Image (tube, rainbow, N blue to C red; front, top):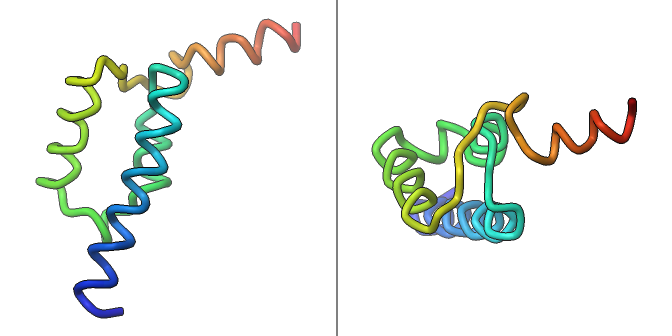
Length: 77
């Protein structure tokens, strides 16, 4: 994959994750790591993206802290 194609893939991954995070108001660290692998997203870029999320009011949480996870556990009980 060329440099231009890799940059486009990174942008697509960011956009998809950002849209989902906006809907929920949060994103988990696990989702960040699964959606945007380190080989595509250097640490500096990941930090910039996380700052962007926080600036938009999107919480970055551990998997067990997710409102969605809590809701799923309540329904299962």
